[in-house]
Image 1 (cartoon, rainbow, N blue to C red):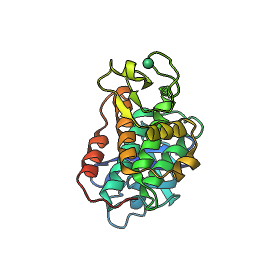
Image 2: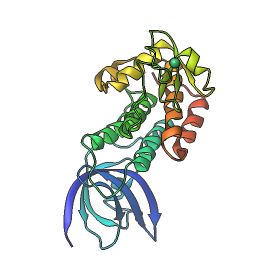
Image 3: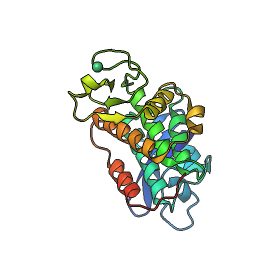
Image 4: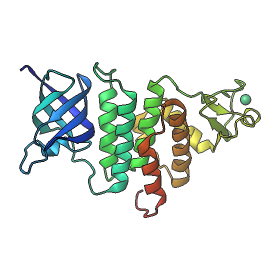
Amino acid sequence: MSTYVDEGVVLRRVDYGEADRILTVLTRQHGKIGVIAKAVRRSGSHLASHSDLFARSTMQIARGRGELDVLVQAQRAGPVPPAGDARRAACAALCAELADRVLEGGHPLDEGLYELVAAALEECADSSRDPRAAVAWFARRMIDRLGYAPELRNCAGCSRVLDEVPAHFSAAGGGLLCDACAAADPGAVPCPVRVIKVLRVMEAEDAGLYARLRLDAPTLEVLETVVERELEQHVDRRLRSLGVMRSLWTAGTPGYP
Ligand SMILES: [Zn+2]
């Protein structure tokens, strides 16, 4: 059986048979693949931790005869996934579900995409980072890659240049709307100037500057609503993890910067 080595992160897993798991793994070189991890639910399995959700490992994989390849060996290549913190796990789950939904299996990824997904999952686990900010960044990047970069400088309705004043974000309309055009879209999200500025940092793909921004709770709230509307508009079905994440955030227990 021929084998190959690649680094990958586990996006999804389902138990299979007596003790196996079937993993959906996003790999650096081979894109999204299906892998069977045999006997990983038996105690003492040396592959068990590599079949955890969001685990990042360098994997030796044998080519299978059917759709699934077989995980043979693995070595950890990233931090331990955020087990035990439901909110961080919910944020990571949303990133993983979005990646799984949007990326087609079976062919190599576009440049930088693997790093984007792996970094998002890592930031969700990083106690010095707000996982909601990581989700918003990742979701915006993925929506842009789908070809739906929103119009943020001119009104997406009438093309008028937008001044440095609050505007309305319309996912259906393709970006920010002036007051006059926003009247036609009751679903448009009112955006304060500070949110518009954050959206423009995201548009510029300036990850360093974005990481340094202090996003207060109201700003994050609007940002999340914008991203949520875009996901609903551009990703076919409602993302299951989005509801889970929302319900966890609104359940109380503050504690993130
Ligand atoms: Zn307009």
